[in-house]
Amino acid sequence: MAHFNGLDGLKEFLFLSGFPNALARRGVSALVVEKPGVGEPLRKLGLHIFAEVEVPASACIDLSRNVPGRSNHS
Image 1: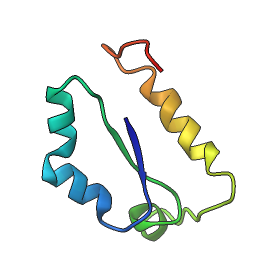
Image 2 (image 1 turned 30 degrees about the vertical axis):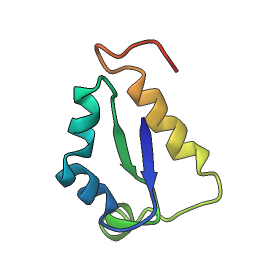
Image 3 (image 1 turned 120 degrees about the vertical axis):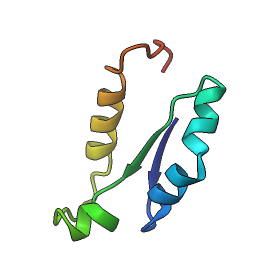
Image 4 (image 1 turned 90 degrees about the vertical axis):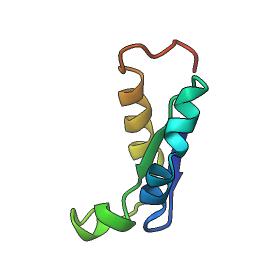
């Protein structure tokens, strides 16, 4: 599962709540992403949002396909 948030702190909340670990115990991999234009990417890296949201999304999906032990299901 890929989760792209749009609210500051949501990524941290999901991680600290144990949600990704709960999914992992059920055999579901979770990728929690803070996209450009919000939170840390904006404040610390100066990455601003742009209309082509598929650019960062596809980069994350491509990266996740190379994780060892990942199934070949899309």
